[in-house]
Length: 227
Image (tube, rainbow, N blue to C red):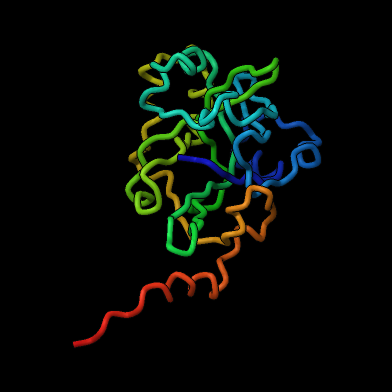
């Protein structure tokens, strides 16, 4: 799944990765760098007009910040948006957690080359303002040790195709499958548990955890006795 993500890329980096986007000259001042975006918060999305528009994360009901790619087209809540309101959510990476006896260990997942990425999403209106849900799918093999679900990442070369509202459901479904050509690779690493608190936000959240934090878990599992 995807319950928290970062988006701190600046205008020049976004334009280099996605040259087809129409970014306002004041994008950097209008869109602050964010390192811990959570459901019910606002963040930019890209719709068919190729402009970055701020939208609310979540369709306005509990647990609607993610939609399963495998069934979104059939769910009444998402059916119309799946057919006619595709969106892309720019991000730098996302977080997943592993439960431990001492609390949740946080992991940050991003493109191996550290470029910005796009999550596939669906958008709608809530109180006359745009809102969105991120589509998720079964995790690719290299990420399954962290979580069994991942946001559906759309390659830059497929972005315009995804945003085409005339796309058939079959072609849309095909774009949601992980690419098998090796063009998109991801890496993950453990980061500070300060990201667990949704009120924290800043680049320090992507730092490696202090040794004392890691040692807390190790101390709970004494070494096995030798024969």
